Length: 191
Image: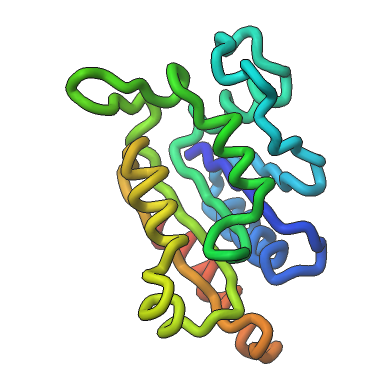
């Protein structure tokens, strides 16, 4: 299976990077074809230039064509990011703006949205400092809503799952090792 991993965290020694490494390791053990994009390391430009959304695919900047091709060809997609102000970091939001585009990934019709990229297995790994009960009771779990309802509710998915690890700031090395073992287990089960 071709699996696309999109990492959105600026610090190379972060838990998010360790999660990405655990994903890559688990997927390699299973013999999957992995496409990996570390958006910060690649200096991905999240700013949607004026008029880019109207360009045909063949006229997009090469980097956007590459990311779009990777997304469209992938059977599974893994997003890894922290919770910053109730959502993914701006670099990842900008990736969505520039890559998951009308005409390439979906269209609006009189009968509703038609997805051209549905059927993917989608896994989101997020991290936060907010305790889980507060995230749900106070904020209504905005990241779950964003990915499951807004993005992949529109694009469709064969299977969607998200695992949030919290509270990172209060976690111990043992907690983090347990979380990484859980990541490997989730990857083995889902892909």
